[in-house]
Length: 419
Ligand code: UD1
Image 1 (cartoon, helix red, strand yellow):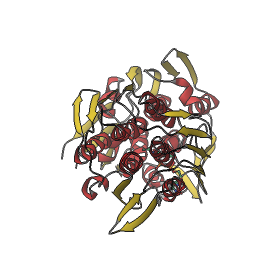
Image 2 (tube, rainbow, N blue to C red):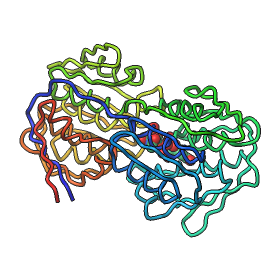
Image 3 (cartoon, rainbow, N blue to C red):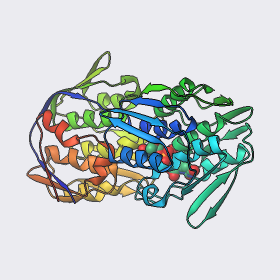
């Protein structure tokens, strides 16, 4: 298995280009199953999660072509059963359920198991499909959803931990081809949901309200092919901002939508870092003495759970007492024990991390446990004494396009050791 060696102590400066959003590209690629016509998607990042999605689409019968960042999909004839072997590798495979149900009125996908960031159920997805008149049953580890006819209705997608992003995507996709009007209440308002809705509307869907808690979908008879450019990845951008905060002098991100990063920018400003924007460029200016913060993760537009681990890495070396409370995935703290192995002083109280800033971290062999946790370990290593050896880097390759090369382009010293 590949590992990454981060040689600490090198300052970052310069310009880095942000890739297309993984979390937008995945459901958008799944949405191409809703039409027989070709769809062309630009700015698709080169990531293992995207490769899995393209494999699933091919398995389902679609013709898939990829040339650099552009993917063309034509799903003229499709099957409705997604194979366990590929599905099990990526939880987001669950978002083919909505388009298959919308187009073929049935879909079978392996049930996603629990994962390291906690139990990740799909009850809200199924509640939404049920509201559209679909039934479901679980057999041999698969969930099958099916309907004679999909009918629009009103449904709330709020669970005990807030709205669901992929659940909103799934129900929105299925509802585009339902009879009548569907109203999703307590919908997720993430920019990736808006990007998907924009793509669906280009395909001929009639969706309004995406980006607010109420999405209205007027069903249409069929959808057609469309061309779309995926939005920039706000989590990759946020990760580079935090890298710059940890080890940077002045770092500029190119091709970002700064408004998608409001809460991350506000947190960094509160900690004393100056930022400036010019169109789609965003610059963070280094700061020798950042201040402690108290953060709480929340659904968009709140502080993103996908930035929690990276902020833990920053605050580990920030003087004073900081706290981060996790409300979206209360168990998402696998990185804490690894950061502690590097010398961080973090105490977990339920779903809150209490972080006492230390003078220095020291490099150590650490284990990546999930995508964002592994990014946090690389960031912590940028400023640690000596070498940080991050194992199981396949996690990081799921969601960051060439993170080692991009950081090295800014002056970091990171080696990838091939297994
Ligand atoms: C998406 C993102 C992920 C991000 C998360 C929250 C993708 C591919 N992944 O994941 O990076 O961390 O949003 O911003 O876009 N829940 C239920 N029942 C359900 C569905 C979810 O209880 O049926 C719970 C989850 O366990 C979690 C919370 O709701 O506690 C939010 O999860 P959700 O928004 O669904 O996350 P994903 O869409 O899987």
